Image (cartoon, rainbow, N blue to C red; front, top):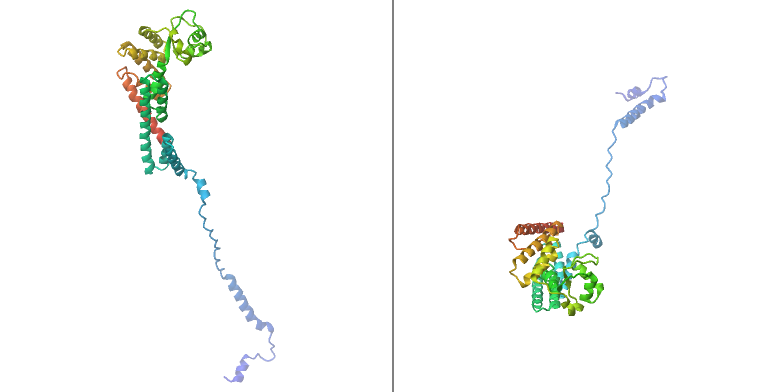
Length: 339
């Protein structure tokens, strides 16, 4: 194409003046389309805000650990106590401390061995002092016997023979018997035996008498021997075995079993083959066992039943039942202690 004609192609006809909006129109369209496209473009998704992780927790301090577990130091503390008590030969308290260690640390072999050793030592010491007391008792050295029996109980509070001698045989040996006469009163008897009427409470206490001063005649009273009364024991008229049996029967009938058994055993000391005294003894101890059983004092009840002849009534079954009950109680106590 001729260049001149080419230029003519773009040239507007003569006499026609170009309008400015004619040239602006394409740009306006382009801008409209651009903004329309921008409006239809979906917004870009925002990145989630990342939260900073908390700093790692510091390990608890020693004070915090102690506060959370106050028993942590117990085994070590009780172990140290046990060792110190062993050095002082305080066997019972040492045994208790080792038992605490064993409870808190069941797999601790040292505490288990120590417990066995100390239990054997305590039994041996208790038996040694009981035999010393028995030797003094046979020699009629009663204060020395009492002291040795008490030491035996300090080692083993459940030592049956030491309890027996302290509660009954020593007390029986230190008693005298007095038969009341017409006109006797508590104060008059106390004055005659102890040279002190104000000791009338002893007469009432040892015979379960009321505080009133009135006494019937022909009553056989048991009175403790005091040092001040040693020279006046002759004032107490000796009582024969038949009279003591009569008194024991009356006391059993009155349900004063502890006094009845005292008389029966006193008779048996001198006449062991006295069958009636033996029956009174069995009946009294049996009733004492029943009374203690009703009070739920099972251990003492068992001790009373064991003093009765095994062939008496249902004693064998009572002993077996009580022993099983006490074993069950011990097992329950162990379980509670473990918890």
